[in-house]
Amino acid sequence: MPGGDVTRVVVVGAGVTGLSCAVRLAEAGHRVDVLARDLPLETTSVVAAALWYPYKALPQDRVTGWAAAAYAEFAQLASQQGTGVRMMAGTEVFRVETADPWWAGAVPDLRHTAPPLGHGDAWAFTAPVIDMPVYLRWLRRRATELGVTLTRMSLPALPRADAGKDIVVNCAGLGARLLAADHDVRPVRGQVVLVAGVELDRWWLDAAGPTYVVPRTDQIVVGGTDQPGDWSRTPSAETATEILHRATRLVPELAEAKVVGTRVGLRPVRSRVRLEADGSVVHCYGQGGAGVTLSWGCADEVTALVTQITER
Ligand SMILES: Cc1cc2nc3c(=O)[nH]c(=O)nc-3n(C[C@H](O)[C@H](O)[C@H](O)COP(=O)(O)OP(=O)(O)OC[C@H]3O[C@@H](n4cnc5c(N)ncnc54)[C@H](O)[C@@H]3O)c2cc1C
Image 1 (cartoon, protein in one colour):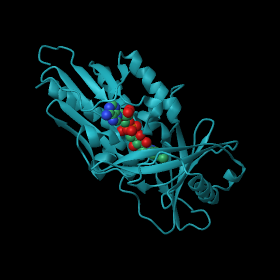
Image 2: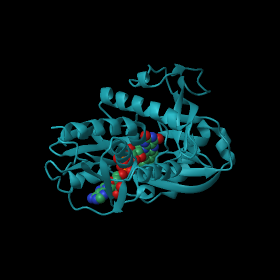
Image 3: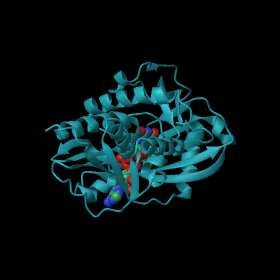
Image 4: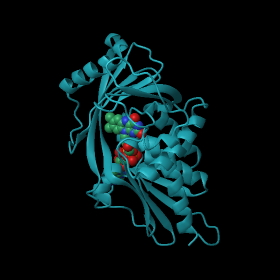
């Protein structure tokens, strides 16, 4: 605000997008209040695998920039106790020879490697791997330390952004269908199986399934599915068996693993991520299968937009 008043920013949503924005905004000196129907450990975000990987998110140029910024931040967080973030090498496999991905510039060490038997090509690279239940607790603590409040509230509409006073940041994910009347954002259902009793020191991915195996601190997340337009959050036992079958073909050690849970989440997929200001509202949703991967990059840009609005 002209004259240096502290702006009140209302962030809608307490998934990885809302909490990352809340932290960055508070670090920039804003007063931040988060309103959310679901608390962090009830969101889609807690279901994420969560491997740093630009998946089902566009446009390519902006996604590459956000992903690179988040990669750098996660690399930093990996050196701090209690964040749940680790840097881990892993392998993505392909049926046939495959060119480098469009986002290769966001990763420092991506290289082709000898593919495992039955595959035509493979890339190896180091990526952040985030244990979401641990990480979301850490993010919430970090936000609280910075004075951010979090209130459970199911909103029928976005709060009114009083011109020149409050700014609203919309991080409602799939909830933007209602809050921003935006039917371009739609669910792509993902189911994962949590297993324990086996130790792996790298992640594995075969996007064709999609099949992925991502070690957390005490468990391994085994995925997955990609089901556009499916709103069901109920896990299917049949799908869980099929996921494990695919994953064990990719990582045979999983044959010894014990199933400890099954989770479902609805990815907020959109034709392109919506990150833009509209008057005193900043929209930030539609990160699809890459909300964790893009989180800090998006939060930095949201903070820059809020600063621009306050300086008008
Ligand atoms: C199986 C699976 C695996 C995944 N793996 C990865 C991965 O490896 N890497 C990766 O980067 N991403 C992954 N993702 C994608 C990632 O989970 C999402 O992109 C991310 O969680 C989106 O976060 P968000 O904060 O935008 O939305 P959400 O986590 O959905 O949070 C939305 C928030 O908005 C609130 N809200 C909505 N409507 C309202 C309302 N009317 N009033 C109040 N509050 C409201 C909700 O309650 C919630 O708090 C995966 C997703 C799934 C399902």
